Amino acid sequence: MTFEPGDTIGAYRVFRLLGTGGMGAVYEVEHRDLGVRYALKVFTRERGDVETLRKRFRAESKALARLRHPNLVRVYDFCEDAERGVLYFVMDLVVGSDGAARALSDMEPGEADEQQLAKWYGELRLALEYIHARGIVHRDFKPGNVLIDAHGDAVLSDFGISRFVDGELREELGIETTVEMEKSDSRTVMGSVMFLAPEVRRGENATPASDAYALGVTFYRLLTGIWYEPGPVADGFLAEFGEGWSTALRQLLSEDPASRLPIPPVEVAIRSPNRRWWWIAAACVVAIAVALSLAFLLPVGLAHRAVRGDGEAAAIPEPVAKYSFDQFFPQHKEN
Image (cartoon, rainbow, N blue to C red; front, side, top):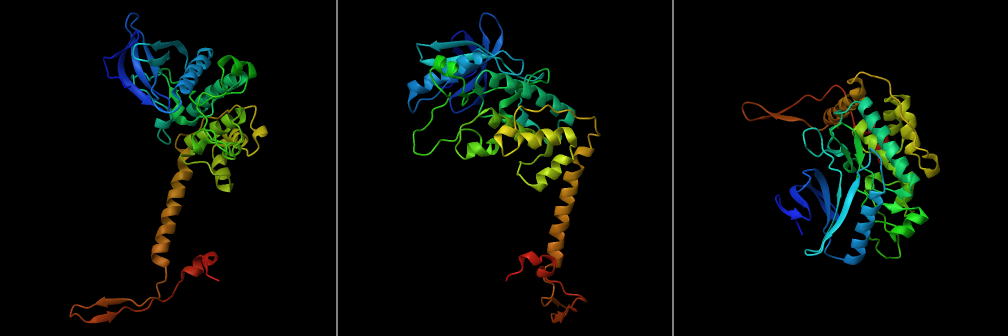
């Protein structure tokens, strides 16, 4: 079921659709009596084991409702419109000062300086530590699930595939995860693939350490504009952002889960906003130079011909020196 601006859901009037996901759609709404605006998440699944999914949707709302942290979305109400069979919960409306919903994934490379990124990192570090201490693993930490509010603060959202590692919490909610897990001989890997920790990709359970890894991938991408790939290139990029970022991200991106925790703080010095991107420009220049070199230095010993004005073919003098691809790239030479 979908809703249009002006429709009502319980005591709330719909203003606009903010986004959709696997379990539901999120709308900006206003309480008809209070005049206060909220975000309202509606359960929309109509296929599969709907009753089990509804149970998990309730669990997500209950898990969020117990959390109280300035950098986490807060749930205020959970309701069911019995007449229409609509299940929903009401939470903080997180929008910018201009009223637009914005996430870290909307940031262009270089749009936020290192000081701003360090501020968001610190806020999200505390938010993750808070939920981990309460037995919750987010499992889908990524830029698209980090909203920026009107004060410029980072707010972690979307616990739709979270996992409960605390025994008492699991017993109270009656489930271990807020997402349906397919039953098969192989493990089902949940999360966004580019942010999955190595052990999760191998099929192991998500833990606080895997959330820490996703935090590292997120800020590596925000800093460099590229995806993280282990190796000397990544190490070289990190070195350009000073000891604070380099030390923290190397720890978070460790192959060993035990090495990632506790999540380290980041302190950065004030630097020129232009300096942080010099190596990107340099990399572009190198790439262009290589491309031009290949264009001009690939085998030029081929016969060159031209056409004279009278239509006769004229030979072009051979170059003074001949170069072959193998001379410049001997590692590609065929054996």
